[in-house]
Length: 271
Ligand code: SIN
Image (cartoon, rainbow, N blue to C red; front, side, top):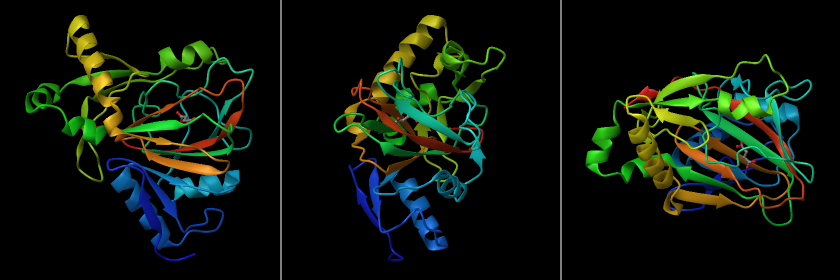
């Protein structure tokens, strides 16, 4: 393995494939730094042919922060930080079908997520990511001024209550700035998403609904996106602070399966 990784962008704005590293082996400090830099530059990065086991998956995540427990669903047996991502002929829904940033309902939403899929359909099952810096940058100066200082409610109850098998579990509901500053890059980005956000707190119901409709449509425009075609043992590592993603469930009744870890983040800082 060469010390310098090869980073090939997928689009001008978001996404890059990383070559020259074996994630089943211990990572050098230089490789950890290059992976981190690639993530900051491209917001989501991809690796091919990485048949990692659960321990290697956790170790990979821990290079970039503490692992976070999923606040909506339980981890797998023996590995509380790993959640299963699975769809097959018996599925009634799959994770992440609507545009979202993972667990934005948490008080301190995760910094990143690492998804490794071992089984994928021959066609379909792609994942899309969108760049929330670009979505913010493209707003008019007047709209940027209007949004600064507003906060949105991110509600985990509405997502996890209908699917939980744990009736006593409480799911987080948190308020976060609509425009946040990324703690590493210091760039401003939008932080709202169709899955968790129910309202903008400082606006009337009608105004909130209209502004959110506009922002969701705007952030989901194709020009800010990349689309990843999975193969068995592909890995995606994304920054939840400046992206949203959507898993396309177009492969029913085929099987798509793997595991995800999330890396702890901090409380979003308002612009
Ligand atoms: C998710 O983490 O939201 C699921 C993404 C995917 O299955 O592609």
